[in-house]
Length: 248
Image (cartoon, rainbow, N blue to C red; front, side, top):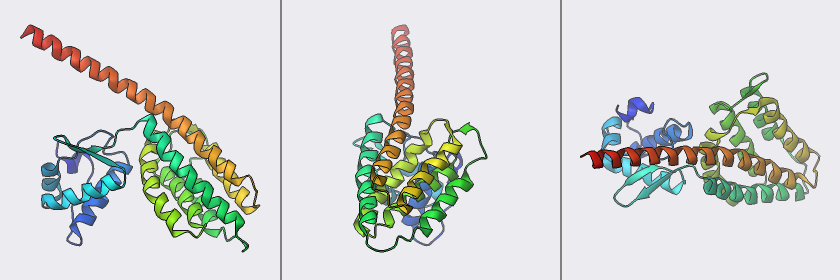
């Protein structure tokens, strides 16, 4: 099946071809339509988008820089696999940035304008179902990431925000593996962070760290189960191939 059909990719209009290809691929990866480890064949994508291969190559280069795609000699490009090590690394970096941002925010002598963070929290609340336990939707994942993006931006540090952005994109992809979780807790977890900042709680940084560590724990469990399934599948494939060779 062509990639544009299988992955829900849109056609490209003449604006900046590379930018549009990049947008379509990034969106499909972050939404989980293009799965971890899936190949991104230049020729097939160029045909699907109706563009030259140079635009595909440049878009993939950007995705590699963003940490969403990896390239290997003689194997081309593929969506970055989900691994426990990657999850820990991404969230370790996020923790350093977000705790630093919260520290800078609390040290500010000015009154805190948290209106943007209140708006972000309302988007989290609106994206949550009324009750129950389920895996977060794409809307909720996007709202979650936006809450943290806004929180970092409130520190007023362009460098922290720039460093945070690619990690936010990687996190959005990783959160597709978030297990079933009480939706009421999803809202309250972020509300506690917002309240701590509003009260200038000196422990707000520790709360952010604990919040991100919980996510690492939940995602790492899913990543381990996923890796185990892949290993089992690979073993079956290799066993079947060996049998066929023996029979041949």
